Length: 195
Image 1 (spheres, rainbow, N blue to C red):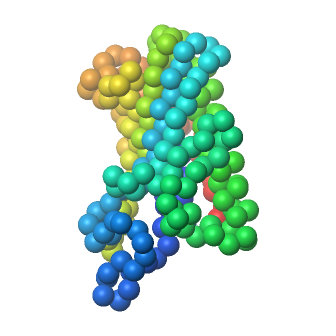
Image 2: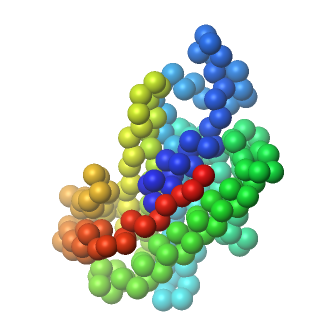
């Protein structure tokens, strides 16, 4: 999932600096300082068949995108937030990316339902996921992913391994063991984005 956000960031943020390093676009952020792009998903699981899902994309403290749950589409919050997807040729790629978000979101929700008993999660429960990257001007980016359970830190993904939060206790340790076992299975990381 993290690779998806990194790739999305590369196409959403067109170059806008002139040779003096001044921002020439109408983007209200200064890219000289480190800035993060993150996708937030909040999923409320009421029972085995009812889930409410909220999603949004953020560039620093500025919301750039939101997920329209009923139609399964991404809404651009700013004129520039569509980035390099403005022409018709790129529109097909955007539709593929949107489809990939839908599929990934559905898979995430199904996995949570399927593993709720194994992960010792009791209905109703809420999962919050934040995934993205921090960009450093003129340097590389650093990816991150964190998951909270019932509003408390639960686990994170670092260097292709899930690590439990100290606050997550034995439940978080158990879930991390299960997820790390899944990571080692052949074909787990087959999701690739073609842009």
